[in-house]
Amino acid sequence: MAKQEISYAGAMARIEEILARFNEGELDVDTLAAEVKQATELIKFCRARLLKAEQEVSEILKDQ
Image (cartoon, one colour):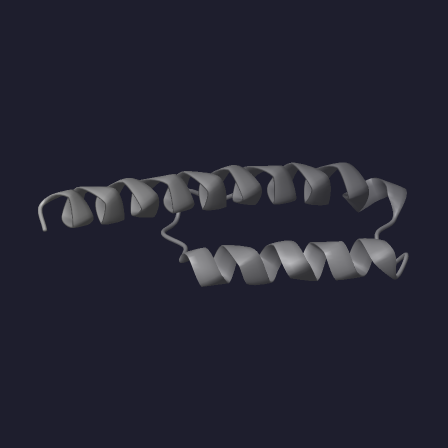
């Protein structure tokens, strides 16, 4: 995945696109590894974003 700013929603949309193409048998052997690698990176990114948001919300609520 290129080092560019992507939103959580954008990352999820790309993961869903890759998954749909995989489920429909549209990924051939030549692109399968690259697509799986990108999906894995996007999943890591999403998990990190969720963790950060959870921590920020916890901090906000702690101060209430």
